[in-house]
Length: 173
Length: 304
Image 1 (cartoon, each protein chain N blue to C red):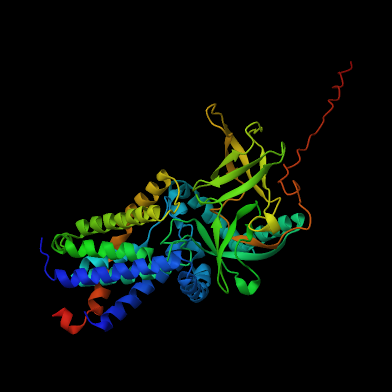
Image 2: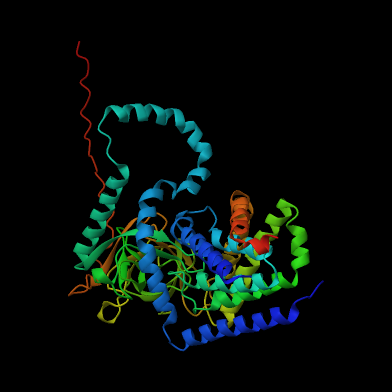
């Protein structure tokens, strides 16, 4: 993986993050919200090779930690998404099977987003954060997963095409 | 399951995990890394947020529109007639009128309370990376805003300023589950604590076990020392249900907020509190009822 690709992909992730923070966050969904950024990152991590999943998990997490409304320690999302990236890298072959069928891939992305949020809550609990009542948290995780399942098909081709465009010539071969 | 390239991946993983833990430790030990980066991002993002706020305000409520789709269908024909009617008149921007009305109400509330305020527009809501319920407003440290200032709307309390950059600020909403405020019941003067529950319902816990709570009681902020984070007298909510539980040490009640946090578009940040506690003067008064007395006049009988 070239340094240039790491830079390009980081810029791409930052642009998605800006869209999330400035546009998607404004939309009032009927049941809680949707994270375009988390969904896009999960798509990217599932398509990357072993080391790519871990590196982009870390970079993606660092970008997510930049969120201006976040009240969490800087590095918490980086830790979580590095772990998620590692889990992706461990199960690369199985995830590769999911990507063959769009519907299963989207289901996988929804579940992965929900799993990332659950890990965030678990680590937050270990760090003594109060994120609200259990029912409130369940509704947020469920809603995120639900909206990810519904909305991801709209932008999935774009993410895949952008990722392909960011690959170096050697990686394309 | 293949584990090829394991050593390199594991080394990378350990390196990145250690880096993450290092960053978390620095942050928890008070090295303000996050503040510096987030403030930078906030400064860079707020002009974009302002732009999108103008461009995308019509789609901001699209989800609620979808929910009302069934009702909307029957209204379409009626609305089409109204559109024709409006075209013939001078069309005023409803959004601007609504915002002006909201601004007038919030400034009126601030004036009655003797608060010195800075009016602000809500430019963003929530965050993708946090479970906190927040809004972003378009004023910051360059407008005299700092942390722990009370934020009010036309209805009453909205929240408290959590972080500030040069031209924007994040407000922690009172609906956030971590939000707590000391309140006073206007009638009985009993004091208690109201906490956010994630929606427009709040929980009141009376500090005095013998205190009385009644449905319809209005709660106002008790105020903090030097008005930070809460200035006194700001209306908070109304008691909707009293929870009677004999085994509970404290008395609890469900409270409905006076500010509709879902619809708040303009707010005011209280930059300095009143010289005197406004006590109960800011509580919304019920609209006066007009009573008309009619004395029936006797019907003139038919004379032959």
